[in-house]
Image 1 (cartoon, rainbow, N blue to C red):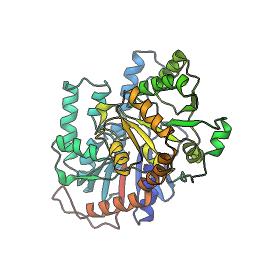
Image 2: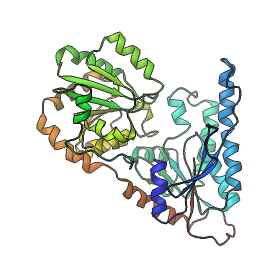
Image 3: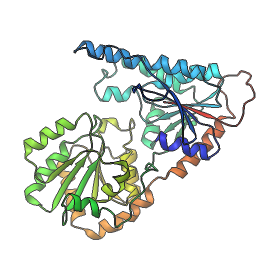
Image 4: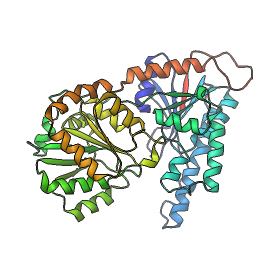
Length: 402
């Protein structure tokens, strides 16, 4: 998303600098990419060859070293009109007020996730524990110092309102389908089906990260139920991630011969792959509603395919599907509801055909998003959280810290 947005803002007339990390020693510490100035810092790498549990402590220290490294480089860079912080690594937003104060910059936070709530929901932090409480307090303090907080969904905005973040600070700008991937036409997907010998099948596809935020039990149970009942229905799972081995083991345990597991596809071939399916699956755990928004939905919509969203009915993904009538919404762990939804779509070709154009019309585009960010950033230039005299500066130059 950032690699798309930054050059688009350059085209809007902004000077953009991205500050990020580098773990590859061969990566350049400073270079220009598509008109964007990229500055990289290298955190300390502690004890990479140690054995557990020492390795876990070393990884924690290495991760912790990212923050002072980013802060030190940020303070040494030329002043920027706007500082934009992101949510990777977690609680990066804490650096924003410090940078803004010393550099006399305006501040915007681009929230792709909400911490520490995500860490609590995934079991990384004890829910409502001392550490989580401290993280929540300091993150709320930092959030209130922003000119705007950009959320990627209405459910995320609602969650921050419940945390008593002032409504005037919140603005919803959804994610989009990456610009380097050209949306497929209705005729695309033929090559994908031919390559994997899937002619004559009703393809149900999951393409994305096998991450901790996603539930796969209902998909695998649904595939087992349909294996004997509907041999014309084929499941395709594409991706990688921390839960991949768990999914592989479950597939073997259930002996699913109607499920094809594929590695991540090339970026220049993603549209063709997505268009190969008749319908897509997007999953999200119920407890993560308002904390994350599955961006893979926008890729599905862009190739004109309907989607079954398995997750909370009041999340952004569910609202988009329901309001645009381009799919179905089922509970995250309800395999029976999933099977019924798949059968309804498989047995109604006319509904499937009508849902395609509605899906494509609901897709978010990069130009529209870039214009929304440009308006927000220009508004930020006229606002300052600290009543300090500011030096005269050239044209707006948003500084995106990641």
